Length: 360
Image (cartoon, rainbow, N blue to C red):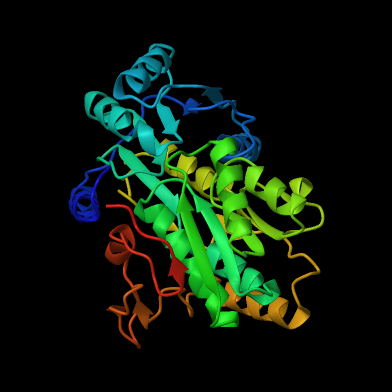
């Protein structure tokens, strides 16, 4: 696992490289292929990308290919990329943090092909790796959770302790405490991106500790199902998980990948395309957003959530506006300041209000 300092250093290096890029022009008409690490109907991460691919194909009137179950190894990625290149594809889009190294190798070996990846820290003149500011909708989801909790204790089950997960947990906590300052958030890592058994066990443990709202920051519906069985509230992730929790589901944090892919494919198809390096896109294009709120969320809080969402969209509010304090009270961002992207990428701590220990 990369350390926060190494990630920040890589991000800065990519920014410098991207700024110096002379641009890439693909050969011929755009021929686009997506690479998935799991089945397209996995119910979570890949299913959300498949929805984005299909919507982008329709909007752009393109036949966009895809391949499923590609190993998250450099060798596995290179084999698939080479097969696509042999068939004349010139825009390759990966959809996994684990594809980063393989796509970087492929990009360096094929300078006239445009590459893109969703999530990760590798980029080059012809490789753009983007991600959503997922902490924005997670802040909103936290507001909903904080409004309905009676025990003042809620939980979130997450994958790995990397920055793009840590900022979700911390924003969820800050959103909940903006509504109810007494809220405490139990955070647990499953050390997997998809493990329904572990997810269910973690959710049940949180329920036994008194949590009455459980959020899923993974791919399966196991957390939502567990909360529903216990009569608790839940929050889904990746896709709308309301069907798995018809009574307790409050909202889901969902991806709208086509909101990035449509414009990105247009850019990569044009002459002298310049990779943006490691861009983050947020509520301004609703790359990640929340689904309609349950009636269980009080109307006055729903209005506050709508106002906060609009403020994120127009840039007048940031979930990481100071003061931001770590669990031990150490000030990370003082009042009047806002965390920059370097601070986000380097987030290797929990904020005040989180119950749990950040793994070493």
